[in-house]
Length: 89
Image 1 (tube, rainbow, N blue to C red):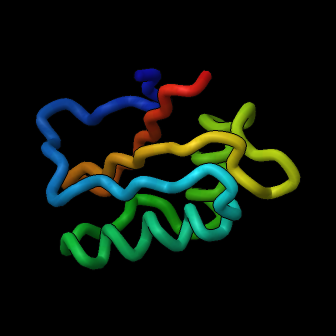
Image 2: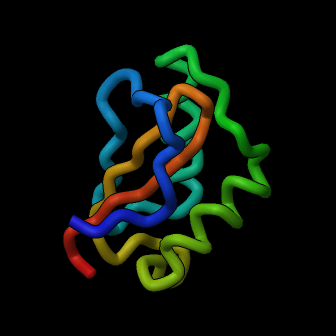
């Protein structure tokens, strides 16, 4: 499993991290991150444009024409940090 991003020290993740299927649109990923954060009572540390840049920075090899080429898992920490995991590259 490959990790993109960094885990905040001492910040545990609440709830099950969202899994995003291959072929999902990038905007679905962003929406899923905010939805999961809301469900867990966690405020995401990024506004929408910042979250897009943050995720694109980690996933620059994944999106193809605004769709994910591989399935990913997303970790949201208690402090609102976001990390991305994938096994496929």
